Length: 321
Image: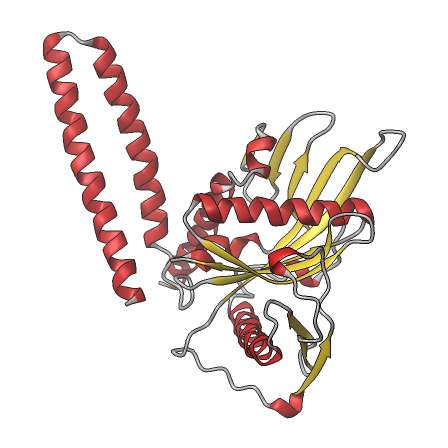
């Protein structure tokens, strides 16, 4: 059913674009015949919007990896910078949550560790919707923020770091063999700011995969049994993503979050002071509208990084041919 819905969305989207293109061209023809310059300008603006939509659809059609169509997990970790970094981690969570909402994706909070004074030390979200992993998979890495600190009484400029880690929710079609003897399972009391996302019980679960050092945790549910099941799914997904990284090591550098969360490892800079600019250091894509970006308008960066990644893959295939 999920595959059918995905195909229906793709086909209906194509048909909608086709119909709008025909209507717009007809409008231009009639407007030009009647000398309606304003209608011509309006129709040309629609054509420009259609062109952007077609480019996005074309890019989306190339998301053909084994897990690109799947839901995904998103982990955010505060890095160097103390309270500043923890506040920045919360800002990143808000940015991705709003991006998901704008695209019709659902989000579930699976784990959060609040900061001492503000923000978050870490958080894990599940983002659900067609191609969620395909769109977000290039977001793994270190994100750098430069701003006037709201926590500094002297209003000095501060640099903070936080990392994002994206990995796919894997389904039954993908088999991952995990030996329980290779894992350590710990229970702990859920913690957080309260509200609907956090239940203060002893039901939280942490699983450590000893051979790889991968750690996952879940405190979403009041049921320890349910949290344990979700944590196992997260571990399977992390191991699958680790295997994908090994396969793509020759063409990609997706292990950014396994390096230090600090200088020299960032994929994107968000500068709020002394000027406004958000720049992706991998693709060169940039914008001065930092407020919109922090409110979830990150499509230009996702599209640029995916296009660059796909171009690199196609180049490698051509070299082999």
